Image (cartoon, rainbow, N blue to C red):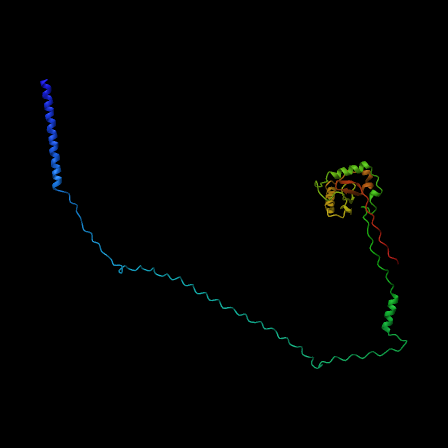
Length: 273
């Protein structure tokens, strides 16, 4: 017990001493603040008063003058074209008072006595009576197309059988080249006279005897002539050469159809004597 009390007494004494020390320090600080109060430093500010009359007038902005337009360029002087001088129409001068007079007409010939005729006129009359009058010109005859020998075509007296004609047609059809769907050739008929040599070759240029009056006629004629020339020579019976030496062949848009009949050409009328 005595030790405990001694401890408490010592602690209390220390605490009291600490409190007293702090109080003393606080009192010193308070007293020091009261003795020397803080003074704020003030500095004077100079203020200049300006009268209302002395206010400077605002500066006016300088006036900007717009640029003056450039003077127009002088027009070039117009070239004055000289007026063309019209030729003065001169009045035709009257004839020079017929200075150059017309030559005098020759005197008329003396009349011949009646009943006599001058010799030149008499000779002319005799020569006119002596010359026989030439017969009037006969009109030119229209020559009919003939075979290679000058006679009629062979189809008028041909003895070819239908089989032989069909064989000739089959040979021509191999070279027939009509464009597919070619308009304007249907219904057109063409007859061509062909002269053959003994070996089946063409003996001359084929002749068109009948052509359609159509703008597509030349097209059909050209295709037919090309087919005849391209497929020559032809195989024909040699024993019947006189029957197929000259043939009139008929062509349509489908090709050769067989033998044709040439149109008859009327004979020219003969002039009466």
